[in-house]
Length: 350
Ligand code: FAD
Image (cartoon, rainbow, N blue to C red; front, side, top):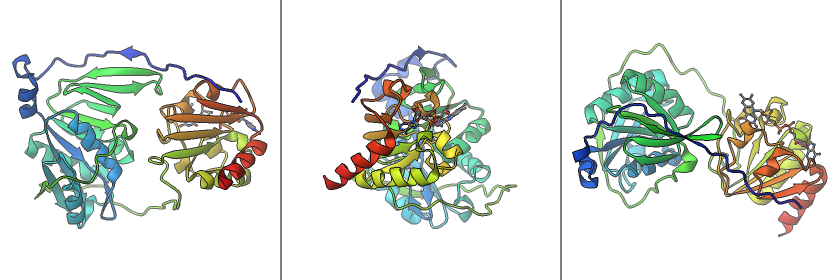
């Protein structure tokens, strides 16, 4: 057994982007609350609210002003009514139009911009998800604003913290754009619970803008396992697994024994051991589960960028000098083909 403390990975940079826009006389907490109004952009799929997107509401609550939520798609009433139950949301703006079902940014951006203008919001917040990353830069461009991405903390109405250089430094960004367009890292803001609220639901404006883009089809990987991005436990395999057959033979029983989601390093994905949707890291999913188990993963910085905020990190690797041990809380040096089946058997009997 080898145990290693975690390295500190943060440095601080303070790029000042603009001068403050809220005058100093108006910066008392009560005055600020009157001035600030946030729009939380929520996601839905097939008429079901993506509750993970309620992280945007939690982030908006940190601002202390009024909060509206925005949803769009066909038969959106049920989604809007569910969102209205979230405590802290004052109003849900809903646009019922199937053109917005798939969140195509070419359609969605002009829609959101019209509703932002109508509502006069100071902050617009979405998740740093595929949807948010696709949409919000376009919204920012249309509003001639600067987008602030992947925010992990909101210090005040104009100061935001975000990781840069694959998480190796932390930047504190000040913005005085009149409308701040923000995406937030879901793992940094727990989703607001669907309880305790009774917001009004109102129809939003629908510009029905002409779009050169149309939805053709989708090919979704189906799995009964927990969702990788939100699972409390994740077991990830790397190139050390050697083949897809071995990846499945070793990692899936371990995941079943722990009730965990399965993840993978990019090398494992590129080698065809695991599906692309399972990649964890800088160019994959960012996760922060209670337990992250890295099996046969060396610990390249691009992988660490996607998992180093996990609460407990366990690493199994035959190389005692593998960098993964520098961020691991618990390390096991040994051959994964011996150690993992043994561990799985013990966990299954426990
Ligand atoms: P390797 O580095 O090859 O490590 C395999 C490990 O398995 C080794 O440590 C070895 O000791 C161990 N091992 C081998 N056999 C056994 C055994 N029998 N028992 C126990 N241990 C064993 N990577 C990501 O993961 N996610 C990303 O999002 C990502 N984005 C990237 C973006 C860019 C721009 C670039 C340049 C790279 C990115 N990478 C990403 C790739 C990254 O740099 C590494 O190449 C990759 O993470 C390595 O994967 P790995 O640890 O599985 O493989």
